[in-house]
Amino acid sequence: MNNEELQKLTESISMNEFNKKFKHKAYFNNRLRTTGGRYLLKSHNIEINNKQFEVFGRKAVIDIIKHELCHYHLHLEGKGYMHRDKDFKNLSKMTGAPRYCSTITKYEDRVKHIYKCNYCGKQFKRIRKVNTQKMVCGFCKGKLFEIY
Image (cartoon, rainbow, N blue to C red; front, side, top):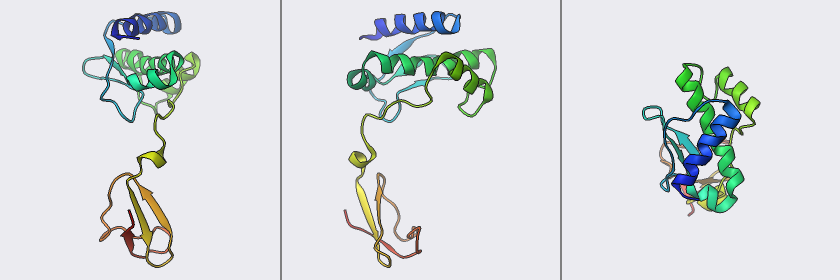
């Protein structure tokens, strides 16, 4: 699937599911890593993670488009477009748009740092490095040290 096909798919989903036209651009963004897609508030464009299509296929992209179109149409109408808003929750439920997409990489695959408590021996896996001078064990308040 290329950007032109994605644009046509987005326009057809918008008309079929929301009965409204999609007047902006939808395209793949290969720089997205942790999200399936995003709606841009300033330009009103929709970006889709191309890895979602490569790994999970067309169905996953359709679900992501539905989700992003909920943001799009509610924002343009001046209604609550954020995940926590009632308008967004109702429209998502009505159109069958999922709240989350499937993750491409598991948390365990992304872990780069493992810490261990000096006192109780509990281990903690983290993606980002933590300051062991400030952070302590969440169970016993013991001092942490980095294993890996």
